[in-house]
Length: 426
Image (cartoon, rainbow, N blue to C red; front, side, top):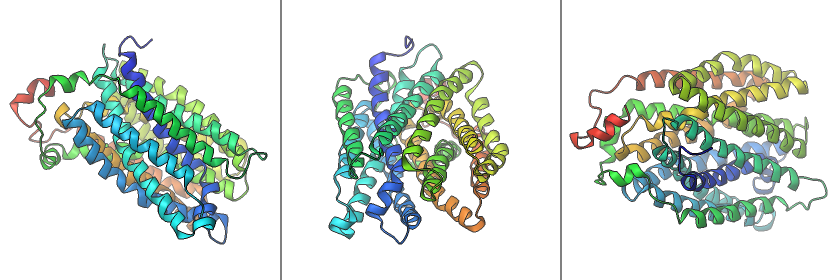
């Protein structure tokens, strides 16, 4: 099945990506449980609101991680950057699982959980984009969109495992501290990934290219429009998912519409749908164009996010489930071809840094702001449909930034030395 990419390279990259999204989704899903433990307030909803602010603060570490791991990936190699990022993720995830609650150590609980989450987010920046670059640079037979979509599918596998583990630890007969086991399990998967990655080979594009370092400022001057497109794409492939996972579902849970156990079951269903949708989007992109598929996702989000969220406002379970499924599908249509699209925006010499930097800014800024902005819109109107304003902005911004990236800047390559690599990615 994977005869167009070395299997060892694909699985080595995918296991880290799976761990990253397991940890990311697990924390988001368990927020209704974690918030009262680490951010106590008068009500569960107020605790949840506090946790949104903390999550936004930790998101600032992601662009810094993008610069750091991007530098490593473009100078020392993709393999070393991917290995180091997974070390940090495994350690930070274990720390989250072991941090005592506010009731035990007071304000230090807030400090420690924030530090652990910040380190985890910093290392996430080197994982997702680096793994995508690594597998696309190994891809053969013009299957880059499908290969990228398969790697993206592993993120949903990570989410699915997180949903399943979350489903188990929220059974009524489980001890109240059982959520800690979920994070410790994630750290153990990370250790397995580290051992597997130690035997990976370097990307063929990196091995064949000159390793001279090009400055960060020259990257910004050469690719301003492309980096803005990275920012919006990074936001798009997280905002709809965070809307469902990090805002709508936790709010409905804290308000008693369904319990934590039912929440995990719903997330499991949404993840299974994502696993199906992502590779289909990748296959269609290989047959047509990554741009066509991704622009379709933009307009879908713009045009139907409001009617979908109106269905959520009915509080009728079939309507609500249908709306959440459709929002997730739109998210995955953008996600499927995104690796292939982003890799073609930059030459190898800048690729890891440019994609990681722009993408991580988008993820941090947009996904970090999403619960805060959506919570404000919801409190202001009392309706989930108001949240569509934010989704429409993301859809339009992504579409316009992609159009701008198609218009090449006057200077589009650093030197004639890189002409062969540049032309390869036109």
